[in-house]
Amino acid sequence: MRQIVNPMMLLSIFDASALFQWVVDNADYWLVFLLMTVESSFIPFPSEVVVPPAAYLACTTGDMNVYLVALVATAGALCGALINYYLALWVGRPLVYRFADSRLGHACLIDREKVDKADEYFNKHGIVSTLIGRLVPVVRQLISVPAGIARMNIGVFVVFTTIGALIWNVVLTALGYWLGKTVPIENLFVQVEKYNDYLTYAGLAIGVICLAFLLWNAFKPRNKSELS
Image (cartoon, one colour):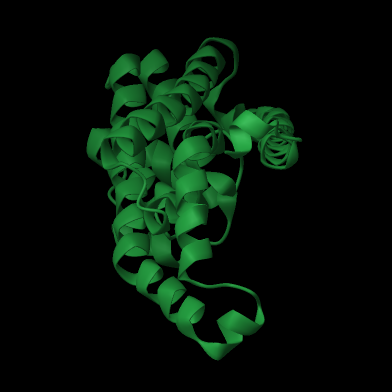
């Protein structure tokens, strides 16, 4: 029988294993959607304690469908990303312009023209950042902010955020489902933590490669036709 716990206890939980167990005891589609929305917005929250246990239960109990777990988690991630995007657009952008118009901004060699050029650059190359950023620890929650400040096309933002989030959630879902066939539930948290370390290293490596690509593209020598 499922344990009934007040969801507000999440605000006071600092032990990852206790939070993980709470999700195991209470997981359903609505909880996955809600927690993934939180994870993808401005509140840091580990998706690794949400999706793998839900997928594990889909494998071992059949209470949920493993494909729906991945899709619902992705929908929640997109919802959280949109919260960040619009907050950055409505709140962050005016602050950026105010700084660009200030004496301090001018002292830092920043003005509106340079802000607009930065917007143009992000809109040209931010698609890669938005897609890859969803796979990088910590960056996942923050990549929506520069997209909102730069007024990235919302349709493009939604498409590539969804693709990136879906890739990440499919990986976590596959991990949880596979563990459902190989480990008892009392060992689930330890195994998820173990494999999460590997996923973190892989995500950081992807982030470094992406950053190197963007820097190379920004500073590579340009021929006269590109400069004109």
